[in-house]
Image 1 (cartoon, helix red, strand yellow):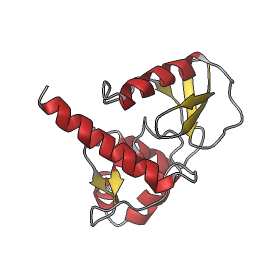
Image 2 (spheres, rainbow, N blue to C red; image 1 turned 180 degrees about the horizontal axis):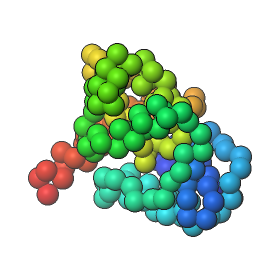
Image 3 (cartoon, rainbow, N blue to C red; image 1 turned 60 degrees about the vertical axis):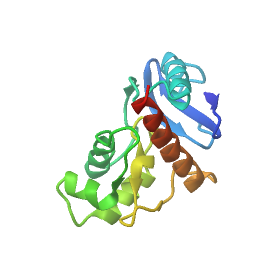
Image 4 (cartoon, one colour; image 1 turned 180 degrees about the vertical axis):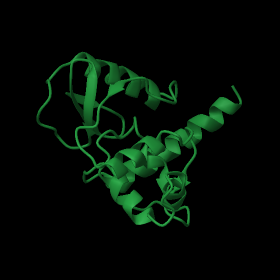
Length: 158
């Protein structure tokens, strides 16, 4: 299912109410139209409008090692509008020397937005890594991180 966003097209795949993949490149597999896709479309629209800071969706990882899934779960602990380094995530999951492996896991994240790999930065606070397996890469990562920071600042004064 293709969803148009202000950043780029987003494809979502899954079955029934469960989302198994979100991508910035066209996906094959899953149902072309499914309730979980509709829920994601509504929630991503709210998120991009600054009206949502987390997702409430049924998800299932279609692949991944135990380590990768641990990294993806850890991404959800990063508060909206904040960032963490690869090293901080490695330390959080009990593997403090595995920051490169954390970066590789983030690169393979099958559910961006929901498991926010865009909130992970390099040790120097700069954007690093490849995001979303598309030509949009770091541009989307930067725009999502800035969007969250801006939305969070605006909500502090609301």
